[in-house]
Length: 168
Image (cartoon, rainbow, N blue to C red):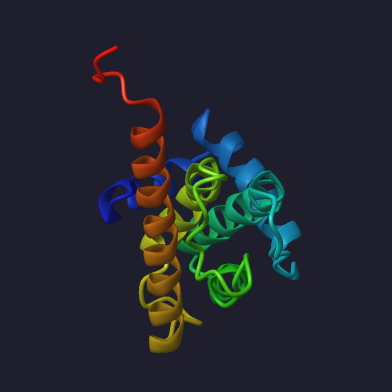
C-alpha cells in the first residue's frame, strides 16, 4: 500500500528521472492516459470467469488512474478512476442474487475478489480526490461488502465440500 510519504518520494524520483521509477511510471501514465475516457464494462451473468476477465483490466486501469492522480495531481485522473469503479459498484453482476451464489459455483467468490484488489488500492489512493462523493463511497463500500460476502460464502462451501480434517 502507498503512504503519502512513499508517494512523495516516488514523485520526486520520477521528476528526477531516477530509474527504474521513471520508466515504470511512464508505463503507468500511458495506461492512465488511455483510460481517461474509458467506460466500465461490468459483466452481468452466471459465469464468474467472464466477470473476472472483464473486471481485471478495469481494476488495473483504475489503479493506474489513481496513481497518476497522486503523482501528478490532475483531477481528470481521479474522476476517470471513480467513474470506472462506480460502473462496477453500481451494478449487480448476477441480477437478483445480491452476489451470493448457490454452492454449485463455489469459485465465484475468489473469481470476484481477486480482480477487486486493484480497485481497493485505487479506492485508498483516491479518498477525497476530485470526483469523490458520499454516494460513491457508499456504493463502493456496499460493493466491497458484497464481494466479501461472496468470498465467505465460497470459503464455507469449500470447507463443507473438501474439509481435510474429516475422518475417513
